[in-house]
Image 1 (cartoon, rainbow, N blue to C red):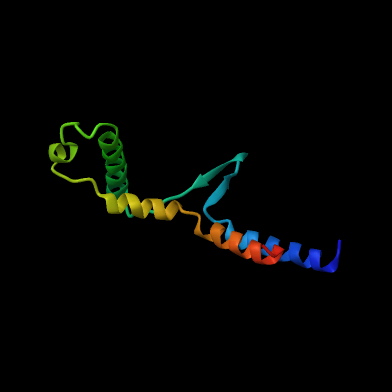
Image 2 (spheres, rainbow, N blue to C red; image 1 turned 90 degrees about the vertical axis):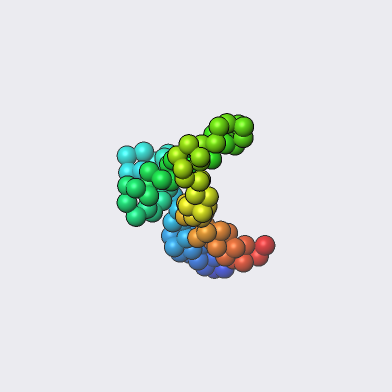
Length: 105
């Protein structure tokens, strides 16, 4: 390999080590990964799961008797979007940008 290629490979390895943060390999199975979300407590986790279910039910059938009215609580779309943001692979996107610079794309 040429010196530039070796240097680029080393840079890419460092970038990959720093960047791939969203998925963690499962210790006992190299073909599976874990994506984690952060919640304050079980109440927040329960609320998130409940809101995800409500949103899915309403998406399937908007004419369903108002789920939000039944529980007297609207769907917390902000919490759902916050969770999606936690799962968004931002570090990996930065890696792709850096990768493009290294390979000249």
